[in-house]
View 1 (spheres, rainbow, N blue to C red):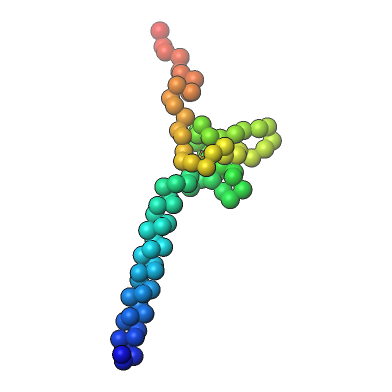
View 2 (cartoon, rainbow, N blue to C red; view 1 turned 90 degrees about the vertical axis):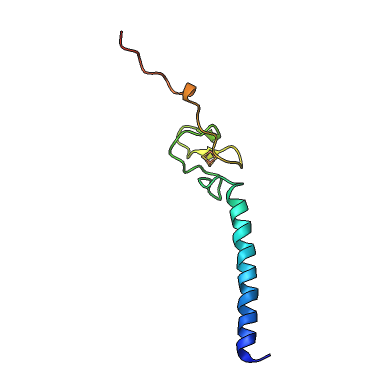
Length: 82
Ligand code: SF4
């Protein structure tokens, strides 16, 4: 095997390893909320039913799963004009 073949073989192995890493990252990306920090704080500024709020405390995440959007029924309805 000459030098060029060794380089091509090494690049092929590297491509296989990177493809595996990318595939794993894609799967993991669907398993964890992107707004959750390593300290389990929530950085999402919208409403999520997993948020735990305490006075003078940062918002914490109560789960290790994806966003559970606040249902529209949790929003105080606007008064209808009569
Ligand atoms: S799941 Fe909800 S509470 Fe937890 S980090 Fe994501 S948006 Fe925030």
